[in-house]
Image (cartoon, rainbow, N blue to C red; front, side, top):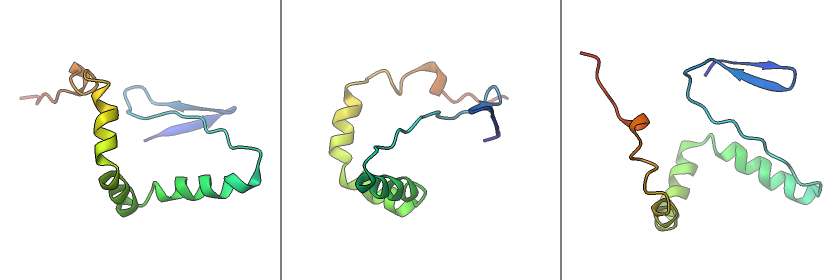
Length: 81
């Protein structure tokens, strides 16, 4: 994903998929290490897959509250032939 960091904001190229999120760390140092480690673990495919499998039922319950999430036309794949 191509982005430029400009004056405190990321500017993404139009049409690129991405998620913009701001993370506010707690002032208490005791929590910062745990949050940082969790963010680093998000890059490890095996850790993420293990976590998703472990919490699959909870995830499905949460996703069931948004029935239109995966039925939007935006998600439809159309071949250009």
